Image (cartoon, rainbow, N blue to C red; front, side, top):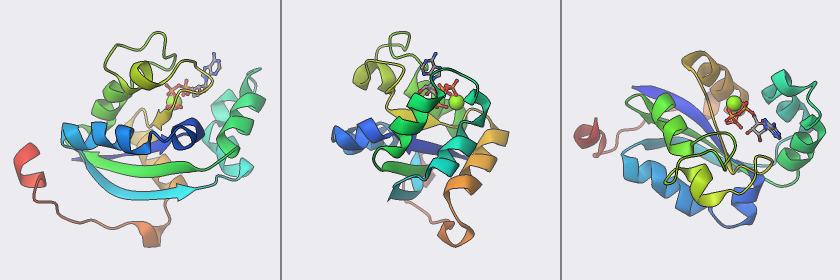
Length: 148
Ligand code: ATP
Ligand code: MG
């Protein structure tokens, strides 16, 4: 069992797509372990995308990610890191496969709807970045027994 960090980016919240996207994960059999709507401070976005700091589009990312709230979620399930990335699709929606979240809901790489951790190491770091110790818990869902 793995847990991964997902952010539903500001365009998802503004366009009223939170429910549609969460359904993709629930329909797949993954569990929403923790979830909250938060307005991100610039410092957290700078830390989260520090590997892009020297890119020309970085100021645009900062403005986009701090422009309105995001939904932060921890998603748990078998191979959830890879599974969520597959459901998410390629970074550029024009290259994402039909049926993926980015293909189905996004038009541009600048507003690509969703973030998902890309490895176990990244997921561990990102879960700590967005959830405090007191927000972390585990609970059982009846469906855990039938989907794994
Ligand atoms: P994310 O980390 O948001 O899940 P990703 O892992 O698919 O996306 P990364 O390479 O980590 O892709 O890029 C992080 C974010 O930076 C992308 O989601 C996108 O919004 C933005 N980005 C990446 N490359 C470009 C680009 N060439 N032009 C504009 N924005 C870009
Ligand atoms: Mg990434």
